[in-house]
Amino acid sequence: MADWNPALYTRFEDERTRPAAELLARVPLDAPRLACDLGCGPGNSTALIAARFPDAEVLGLDSSPAMLESARARLPDLTFAQADAATWVPERAPDLIFANAVLQWLPDHATLLPRLFGLLAPGGVLAVQMPDNLAEPTHRLMREVAAAGPWAATIGDPAVAGRLGRMLEPAAYYDLLAPMAAEVDVWRTAYHHRMADAAAIVDWVSATGLRPFLDPLEPGEKAGFLAAYTGAIDAAYTPRSDGQRLLAFPRVFIVARKAP
Image (cartoon, rainbow, N blue to C red; front, top):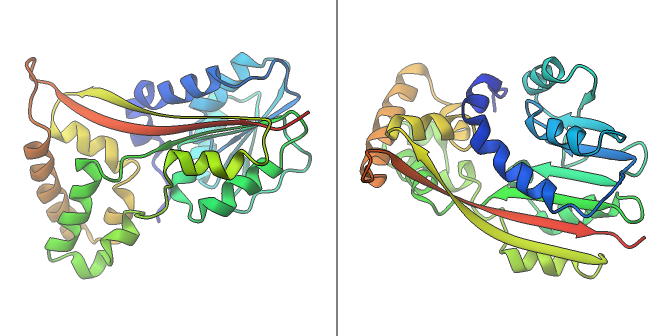
């Protein structure tokens, strides 16, 4: 895919940061020495970690040069580095690996999450938040529009572009980590975000889930796809009593603590 667009991503920063704050609030650590923000994006979650643990060494990691540039500008006193969450190995064992809205992009969670957990120092915590919205109208309609238009051959298999089959059920994450961990906390929450109109919902997903559908398209195809998708979103998310739309956004949270 093309590089991320930090400006588009941060257009809904308050809404995107809220799950990170709620995940961090459940991390059972008092004074970690090293906290790694894996998939730090523009640094919004990294800032939360640094504020909660001011004495910790905080390292932000992301595969996107554009996101890292934005994060460094935002938090010039912290350290950021380019890394792929699928293969990253720290130089020394972290006390906290914080992965907010990144692991859903990667396959083979049955291998990935135990691998990340194994990188922790004794007593360390793996804290993960992942969008779980592939069955929501936003993402179902991406696949339907991709399969139905003249851009279908360019996009390819909508299931692949839409990352179907990557997420596990919450209980499966518990089963993966419980044999390795001293404690595992798993929960699922659906947020309902107020959005002004269908175009705002399309803007939201254009920064994330819609990217694999849009990136292969030429400008003319992209405009046609977005027009068709926006129309479908407008029909699926009807105005509420105050004229706003409600974007339901389920997310899965995992906090697993290693034995001391």
